[in-house]
Length: 120
Image (cartoon, rainbow, N blue to C red):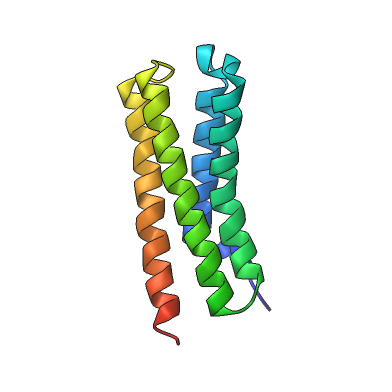
């Protein structure tokens, strides 16, 4: 029986990112900047959603495509974190924690993609 995308470690890490982003964007001035708040949330959701969708496509080629989209969304979150830091919605510690999760996800996606490519 298929264990599902829930077994994938990088999806679990992306879920952690979702929670972190939602917590950060629910506070203070960040929660009132609807455009940035909603955009960073959508980008974060895109990371976990694309990993799940790629897994569901059932071919390595399609999974690789969606992993690429997930990684790009991760970089989008990183860019938006810089903006949030620059406008002081986040302090350096909050920024570093979320940024580190993104870095881990990017590395994990890269590793999973290399693994899938080796099966071609």
